[in-house]
Image (tube, rainbow, N blue to C red; front, side, top):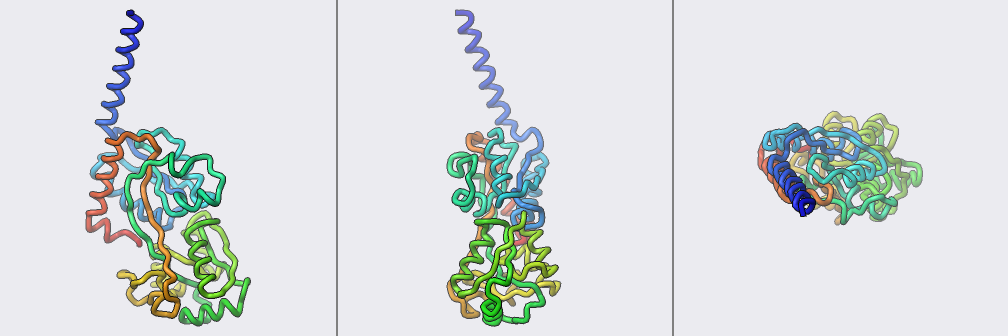
Length: 285
């Protein structure tokens, strides 16, 4: 009987400790895994939002870039992490949709993650290296047709949003070009600027700084409306490629089993960050 009572006391103590830890969350720094190389849309957006989340949570959020396999290496690390709210991942269409069909994952995309918040929807731009002779999208399509299977497009890997938007573009235009995988959009954009690849389907955060510097050419926005941040770039509808739209998302996830109170605190901090006009203005999307 005494052993049973002792067991109950120990169990109650452990439960009480767990509740106390949840109530005081966070009591130490949080790691946010960005499963791509630094410099891309997911990386930059996450860093801006995390900086504002820190103000409400009262703890530092450490951004760790864990790139490889279209984001599946970093996402897998978080899927297997302790569900305590101290290890999170910035997810995209690549990591939380495509990888389930492309890679033999050691985790379950549906069962092993807890959603925290949507950060942004991201539109794509059709861009090319500056020495391409065409100055508009019809001319660029004609150039690609004349150079079938010779041109190269930078991507973040097999099944990535860059690759799938490129395949969509190929099917709509009857063009053929090769895809070159990188560990992140940042390195891919560096090679586009250097002229090592010919084109990309790129996010505004990756492309606009280089477009404004004259380092690459922009042909169209893959959306129904022009970008508020770049109103001079036409939509695909306006340049004869109607309906060829593509977008991605950036989200925050925790390991499945993370306490609901912790998820609520993280969600509230994210919502507060996105409500900050300065934070939203700084988002590179």
